[in-house]
View (cartoon, rainbow, N blue to C red):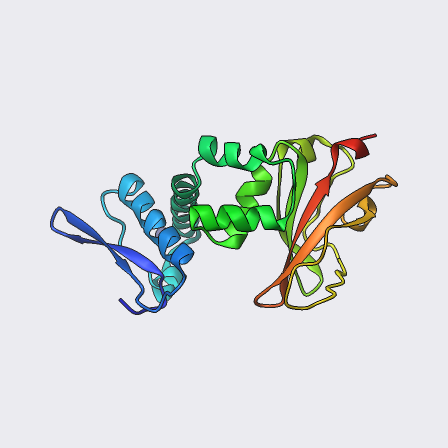
Amino acid sequence: MSSQYDGCLIWVGTTCGILLNSTIRSEPRKNFTIAHELGHYLFDSPPISVVTKDNLLKVDSHLLESHQKVEQRANRFAVELLMPTPIFQTDVNISTRIGLAAIDRLADKYSTSFTSTAIRYARLNQQACAVVMTQNQQIQHFAYSDPFRQDKSCFLKQGRHIEINLSDSNSSTEMQTVPLSLWCETGSERKIQEQSRPLSGNRILTLLWLPDGSQS
Ligand SMILES: [Zn+2]
């Protein structure tokens, strides 16, 4: 199909199929779309109708909220299907070498996008690390590991102003040491490792990592 949507679930009687937008070229995006629609198939029967942007404006806030929940559940299902926790977690923690290159290798292996792999990588990591998405020098989103969350000095905040120096605008920076207070709301003088990569839409993805030795 060709539309503004990446894909949809279509029912003919009791038979169900997945339509994929024919303009999608990226394999990770195709995989994610199919996995997302499988999530709808498993959780959202009887089938939900396709909601167009115009329809969405007409529904009340309660329906809108439940629509968002349905979409979030399908997304969570897709992530778990494509990067199953026990398998992915083993792959993440088999190597102690933290970095964007490790995320690239996993994205390649699982055929998932760099960003969704990075988020999963941070969440399932046994070391204190986080991935942060900034846009126009402001923190937009982040995800972190349990050790990062449990560290009292590591408090990330949406909207925080961050200036990242990208030496070469097309590729990742080297891992470098910066003050933790650059990223986190903290009075601590500890240091943190950061590595950044520019993405489309003026966005930058940064991996933050507190090596074991830096705990205080
Ligand atoms: Zn959906």
